[in-house]
View (cartoon, rainbow, N blue to C red):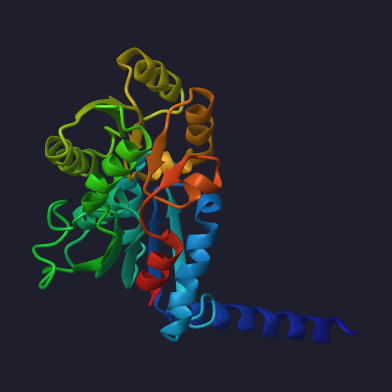
Length: 275
């Protein structure tokens, strides 16, 4: 090949690359904020992309998705949300309540679609279910309303027990407070006593299970929190080792060796927000 032919080919390739990049930049951009790591979101991301496809959008073909992951550290969500807002993006998506709250605090103009495990009104995400208001909408599994059912199922499993432990994550204060109120009301209704135990790091799990033994609690409610979901296998193993009947709001818990669950399918919820 002659030198000028090579130069011509190289120039054409460069022009094509610039044009392709320009076309990609012209595509609508979705900003996705995850509380955990992409490895934990495999099924949910597949479902999310399926929802997008059902709506006519295919990643890298006619839509670009920018992902940001907090890797289980809720303290990083605010900075990651601000980073997404600054790209810019056409729409923002979150798969957890803490991520949704971070996105809401980061912008009042870019549309936000969220999935929340609790009542979005009580959590301060929307003004009302019928009229979300502002720039935000989404779907909820209403796990706050599952609190009574979690305690009932534990009570049926250990009928002699009158006290149970509840595991909450203090680094997700909005969700922790809302779930605590719901469980306290449910406990009063069922004539039960609950003990609130905090954990926001993996090493605190051992302390929690030691405390459950000291309290002689009949079982454990693991509240619906993305941090606990990220350590679902560890929690299931500790519950089995310490012979503590435990319930979690997601079906992945029994699949990991836990006793039981009562709640929604996260993959299906992510298909909904994708559509």
